[in-house]
Amino acid sequence: MTNALFDLSGQVAMVTGTSRGLGQYLARALAKAGADLILTSRRRDTLAEFEAEMRALGRRTLAIELDVRDHTSIQRMAAEAAAAFGQIHILVNNAGCNVRKPALDVSWDDWNLVLDTNLRGSFFVAQAVARGMKAHSYGRIINIGSVTSVFGYAGLAPYGASRGGIRQLTMSLADDWGQYGITVNCLAPGWFKTQQNQVLYENQEWVDYLVDRIPMKRPGQPHDLDGAVVFLASEASGYVTGQTLLVDGGISTGSMRATVAPKQRT
Image 1 (cartoon, rainbow, N blue to C red):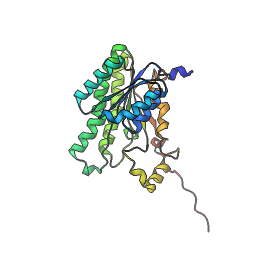
Image 2 (cartoon, rainbow, N blue to C red):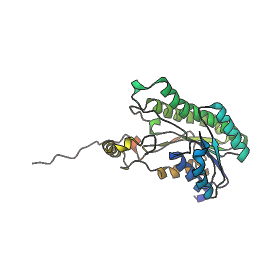
Image 3 (tube, helix red, strand yellow):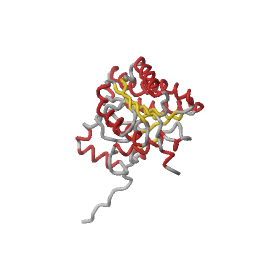
Image 4 (cartoon, one colour):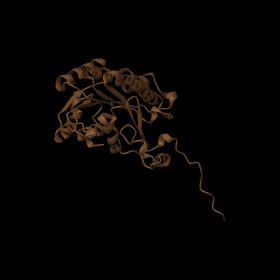
């Protein structure tokens, strides 16, 4: 096996939701592997600093406004990207949001916001980009899921539904588009500290509880996703499709203590 299997030189990767957070880390990993980048956010000006950083790496970079809840915006983005780069080889469907509430407090609008962004948006972005991938008989689509794609957590009903849907969507699209040389996989991070959940990490008791359940005994760090996203974007994963790759430190094993330390005799 050689590094050529993971070399993305000459390829174009689109990463949605790159104004902050994990989206930037994912895009940075692809750029360091050689890919040129299409970055998206609802406001183009929020991408300026990161766009400059990627260009400093020697990568061609294009920043485009995209609201994944607006079908017209998705179509416009796909047309602009195709006009600028021609072929898009890799799509990372990262744009997402969350509403953290007890299920009895979730409103109609809360549900629509999360599902429209995370699930419907991911599908229609993938559809728009896959049309070009089909024409070139090649594509790598990476849908960003979560440990909530396979686990249920209180207070995350809309989010868990959207991420569970992403897992099922991934399998359906893999079956649909494999004949066109397109692989579709789900990259599912575990508990990573992001702007969406940083308030949780201010509670040390909760952090201690979390770490105790993770076999690796720490929350995820953004760089922990680098190898996984490059693998799924590269030739190394050419025969891998429809899969959910959990990068979660092992928490999805259902880790809990099966034994306790014996009591000291007095």
